[in-house]
Length: 173
Image 1 (cartoon, rainbow, N blue to C red):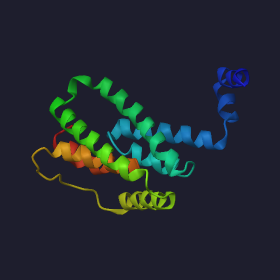
Image 2 (tube, one colour):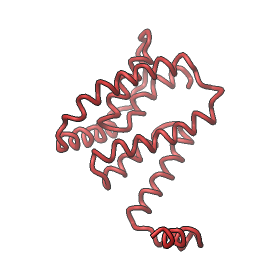
Image 3 (tube, helix red, strand yellow):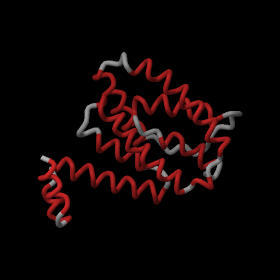
């Protein structure tokens, strides 16, 4: 009941922490560590968080839930860095992202869960073991294509930050 939950969380924080289920404690800890990593390095936290979350949630829950968490995290970062936003890049990326979401969502709803899990697992292993991408290609309107590809892929695998990083780093963002 709400009263029991309120009593659990309103008292001593250590007692509240001890009463959490193991799953909740792991997820809260992972969120804290991944947020710290993202705050310090500017990237990497999303990939870490989705790897931990994947052990607790099926893909149909994992990807949207991770998206909500990342949206909240990135929105906060955007508010704190509002004066530094490069609006041309923002609009190009956003238009591409909308198109990527439209295309990806049409495919996503037809994907069997086993294939979805296989794609997610492969992507996590792939991103773990491939060498870091060092250079971003020079393409006119690249942030439109980056938004399209990033949003399309994120519907299937969640954390695509490592693929985006070289493009943003090249622009000193």
